[in-house]
Length: 351
Image 1 (cartoon, rainbow, N blue to C red):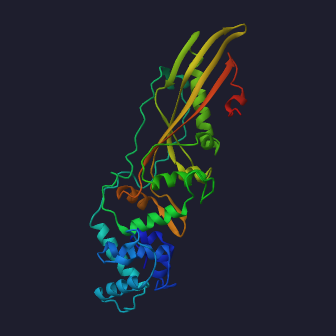
Image 2 (image 1 turned 90 degrees about the vertical axis):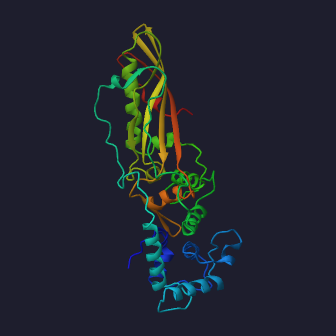
Image 3 (image 1 turned 180 degrees about the vertical axis):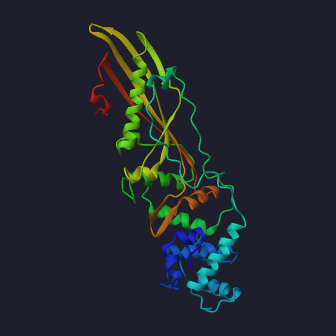
């Protein structure tokens, strides 16, 4: 029988116990035991020794956990009352917890399937810019709902701890599952600080053809607009943001670190009369914004659990993690002459 309750679905160890391969019993210490303990506590069973040290599940299948599992088996009139958590016990816990969750539903604010923006169509480039320095209006994602708006489930806490402990510390360059950036962004989310994060936009732009083309398209729009201006110095900015997406086939790191995002450009342009025609200089800034949350359908394995968008959103609503704004920018100075392209080396990051 397939499992339904999110923390159970996520845990490889719970899946094995549900198939008696093997069951969990006294003497085991594991993440699966911590999730089991949290599930029992969520159903009202008391485990004072288990929770004494930190106030949360300790993951140790000691005498107390065995006794409480036996009590649960007795209360549910299960056939095998032995204090070990095997197929019958896990299945009954799963059905009770899933039903309990269903009785307190929430409205999913964002769609199950992520909206992947289409690549920018051909357009009249200079219509995308205007004179001025104010940033365009930035669309806001509704996210997973209101932060800390649901009662915390101890089984969800145990699951959050499994993920947090598997991630490298802040500032580490260690690669976890798909890359440094997705690990760093996930750890920031799990810290529940909600503080904005500045992303490594240079690295993201270099990660694949789609983000690179989006950057170059923005530069092309700005260039075309500048070439319509008269001699003098002008502040320019995008009329609106444009959307793009980090595809998993191009970079798993940035697919999980960001996914979809909004970009725009702005800068100061100088148009001067040269000996052989007009000369242009553009101090340009390419800007990025996104809200960190997980698109519907995303999942990734880590430390014996499968992280899904469903319980990532639940973490936020239960106060175990918190969505945050991501921002970033790339600055370049472009110089070119009338009728010429921007030299290729000017797109690259100067040493």
